Length: 204
Image (cartoon, rainbow, N blue to C red; front, side, top):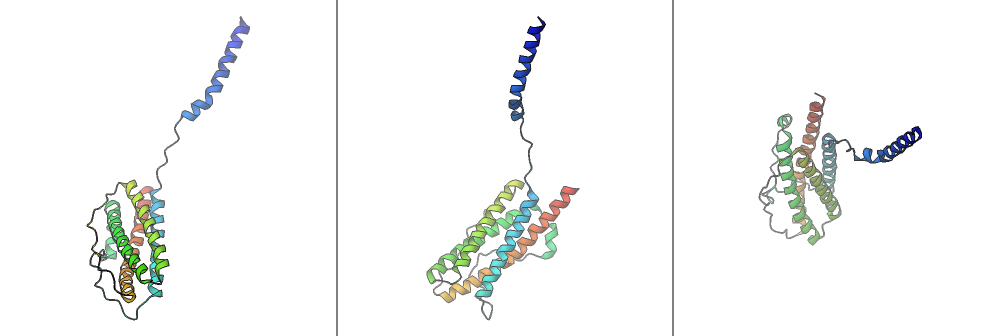
C-alpha cells in the first residue's frame, strides 16, 4: 500500500512539474509605459536637423538682398514670443505644431514640383528635407496619440500660381525657407521645454 501511495505522489508531482511552463507563460508580461520624454527629445533633435538643412539651403542659394515677402499668403504666422514658451500646455501646443507642420509640408510639395519643372539645383537637398518633414510629422502624430492631443483641421493652404522662371523659383524658395527656419527655431525650443517640464513633473 505504501508503495502505491509513493508512486501516486511521484506521478502527481511529475504532472505538476510538466505543467509549470504553461502556468508561467500564461502570466501576462508587465505593462511598460511609453517613454513620452524620450519621444519629445527625439522630436527636438529631428527639428534641429531640419533647421540645419534649411540653413544650408539658404546659404547655398542666398540673395544679396532679402526676397520679396508676398508669394505665400497661407504660411503659418510665426509671431510667437519667447516669454510665452514656459506657459505652453502639452496637448494644444502639439496640435498647433502639427497643423503648422502640415501646412509647410503642402508648401514644400508645391516648391518641389516647381523646382523639378525648372531644374532647380537645390532639388536633391529639398527632397531630403521633405523626407525629414514627413518623418517628423509621423513622430509628432505618434506623440499626439500618446497624450490624446486633438488633430486640428485647418483649411487647405492657398498656393500661388506656378513660378514662370527659375529666378522666381529661387525667390519662392527663399521666402519659404526663411519662414520654415523660424518654425524650426520655435518648435525645437518648444519640444525641449515640454520635455523638461514633463521630466520635472515625473520627479514630483
